[in-house]
Length: 186
Image (cartoon, rainbow, N blue to C red; front, top):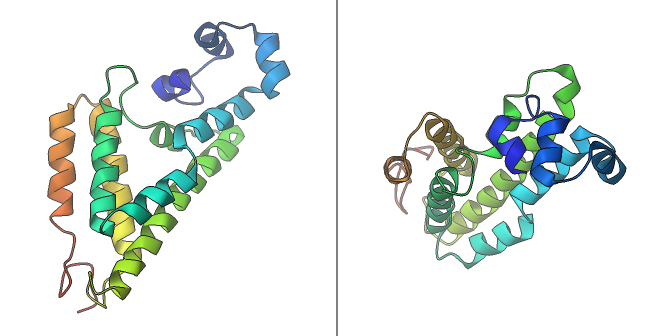
């Protein structure tokens, strides 16, 4: 996972993977079939169980609290000492060859799952009166994803954790309240 995270799908070679995993190429092929299947398994491990994210969003006092925790967590992850800078999902999106379509689609699907979890929680807050009735859940979820993925690029460019946390907090200043906000119809 770390090898793919560091270099992306296309530029990570089988020899990179054998060195990182401490196994031979035939062992990788026997266990996973090919490099793409190994990457897809690494992506699932990186993304984690969607049920865990759903539970964290459900337990948070508000959707805003859940989103800020998610974005702050991303800032810490993207700048961790033991992990490559940035986001594995973002590096998969940069994959360009036709052969890597499945890789891009898998990363897109992971983001869609995260987005759907956010949207459901935002809708709950609208129903509870914590957000204005005209609030657009998809806009807020997309803002959170855009900020998260943008922070990945900043981390790859050398931004430190404090810089990413400042971006996260600035972005959340745009989160609407119960009566009005930029993500509402009115």
